[in-house]
Image (cartoon, rainbow, N blue to C red; front, top):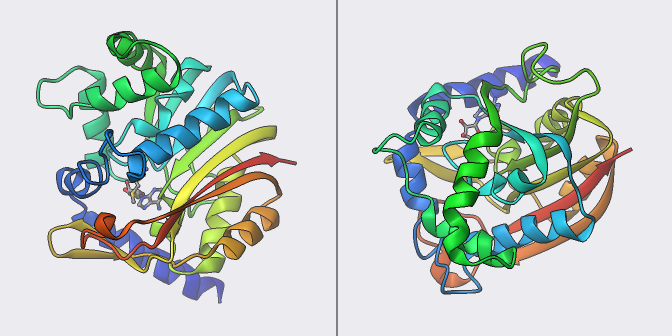
Length: 271
Ligand SMILES: C[S@@+](CC[C@H](N)C(=O)[O-])C[C@H]1O[C@@H](n2cnc3c(N)ncnc32)[C@H](O)[C@@H]1O
């Protein structure tokens, strides 16, 4: 059974070799999914959840780790104000390079300006403060590390302080790299080893999704989750669930790049 699971997790890793960051960003991080004029657009919803979760309980600390960052930065735009260090991570070198390119202010890197402006507004700042926020994010990202959530130690030894991270963020990673629910739950337990006791997990993921496009013509399989399964996996991995918010995809957000029906946002505390 364990061997079988490893075999299919290995097949998922092989599938990712064709992942194209530019195509992925185009599919998911442009309108209508990232339309800041619409309150029911998916990206503003995610940014609001992250902002609210961190401010409600005044979550802050030393180290924030983003698990499976991909080529995106939106998921740490609120957290970068509240932690001294932010560690980004991804399995693929192409994605890590994309992130490094933004950190080094390469002209060819992706423009996240509208995202920064939106988060500034959520924080009650003028949208013109976005340059300060971008500088803050660049200054607190200490590393962009390789990660494999299917390993019991997903990051290489010594990447984190011995007590672990104060907070983990992970968006659309675990379900899209796991062949089935046991593998998803096991990946969740693996990343929990990175978090200190009493630390917070902010987990965002797809509901009811069986595939997404990782490049033109590349369908990446996803384990289709429902809310009960997310709650089960969190409990099984030693978390107390503090909040679960659900986003239902409006018809015009179904743009043919996946078959997702909803998105969950979970805030949980490691017991
Ligand atoms: C759907 S993307 C999510 C990217 C980003 N977090 C977001 O919110 O859009 C899934 C990410 O998981 C990464 N990945 C693939 N296999 C992985 C593994 N075994 N461990 C950790 N991350 C993996 C991929 O490279 C990809 O960047």
